[in-house]
Amino acid sequence: MNEHHTTDWRLRSKTLSHLDHTIIMGILNVTPDSFSDGGVYSIGDRMDHRAAIQWGLDMHQMGADIIDIGGESTRPGSSGVDADIELARIEPVVTALVSEGVVVSVDTSKPEVASVCLDAGAEIINDVTALSDPLMAKLCAETDAAVVLMHMMDKPRTMQNDPSYGDVIEDVATMLEVCAARAIEAGVERDRICLDPGIGFGKTFLHNLDLLRGLSRISGADGYPVLVGPSRKSFLGRILDEAGYSTVPVERDAATGAAVALAIAQGAFAVRVHDVSGAIQSARTADAIVRSWQ
Image 1: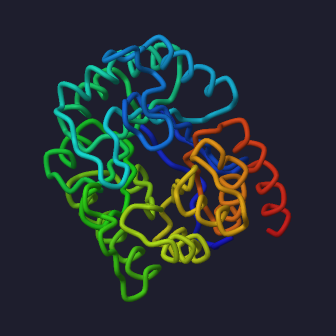
Image 2: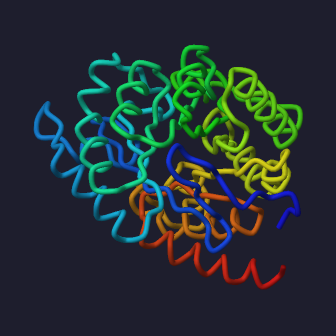
């Protein structure tokens, strides 16, 4: 593990430590169109908030350290939604889970959505645009929000059109360092920042493999904690296809577990997953092995 790898990430009301185990972030998409679980919490055109809240509580009970709630799909080719629609989907879920003592992250790039959710008690803003909106950066600084800064080439609608890099590992690491410096300049405290290389966001199949193989370069980038989100993504589907196993996203949890274990070996602070129970088994096993090397 990289010697500069941090063991702490300071949130608004607490600090998460990586010292004992890799942090598990459970995914809760309250959307009709996310690539893996879109529409799971829908009744016709309405969101089934009760079911979403219950699944968030279930993941928390399984051992998820954070529940990451999203109301807008960022899958390749997706279109955005208005802030009022996004809030209608997620605000009741955020409020309910916070009231139950759950550490809540909100997956949004809209300052108006983030503001309401932070007022409701969310601890983290997980922004796929890495606080590119100055209003979002200002809001996170003023509210002491912890932030996840993710690397993404272009926008979800076009990010997979023709992604290219000189050296994907160096290019992504350098851009994330720039994003972190920009956030700090806007007033976000350094120890509240987490970096995400953006697996599947403007990357080819080989780019994703390279990033996971070279993750230690990013996890050592100035000592920031690193979040990795390989869960059920299409690069895993391609690997399985080439091995003779045709899969849909929900059938890729075992493959996700392998990616989680390898990310931990490369210094990941946290992993973002759909299958919390399976990921905890993979992560705790990898934790035990990796920590035995130190």
